[in-house]
Image 1 (cartoon, rainbow, N blue to C red):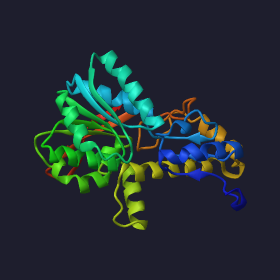
Image 2 (cartoon, rainbow, N blue to C red):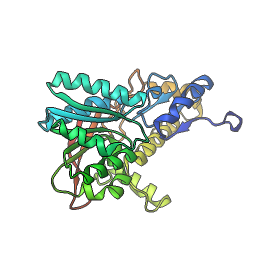
Image 3 (spheres, helix red, strand yellow):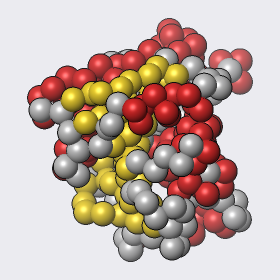
Length: 294
């Protein structure tokens, strides 16, 4: 990469990527703008700036949403990865503060094939809601296992639950009217009537016809937007060091896709999320309310 004189890395990738790349980027002083935000290594790094939501945020936000929905007995499925273990730890703390009880929990392997028995064990604990902190393929296996066992609980999930692959491969379960599915979103949805969202949809659609306007696509666009605007503002003074300085001192920066952003010391300023509810009639998620703190 350095042989190709790459100036900066822009956009999002999966959490496991950051585990190996962040030490290299830090050592080489390479700016990373807009990574997905769910890897522990993307925070408190001198070179990485995320506009996503941290693992801590996933845990706190899901517990609080369950509380707003009146749920006090929680069943939790989460991945056995360091970042999602942090999510679960924070979920436990927030649930205790909220007066909620975790009646079932399972750290699932990313390749787990035991959802058939796991969802039955979760149901036997009589939860009010199932909380998912899972990747999309794990959610598909979980939901299809619930469909096979005629289990239709309410679900509060993170971004993996809203992935397009879930709607495609778990449609039978999601379309059942016996339950509700709520997922958090990091940015305004594609149907938000604001100029910045329209610009994203129109521009990305021009170059990638038929793309799915997921949080992943929007996060990558947001990283590119922030990098481009900050780089342009620096003009001929653009260097890696001047870029670091400008990103570190962002104040009330208007993205149009998130609440106005002020950079925090951990380089992860997004402390608010949107909540969406699955609408079986239109086979998509609809926004409920405005941005909420974790």
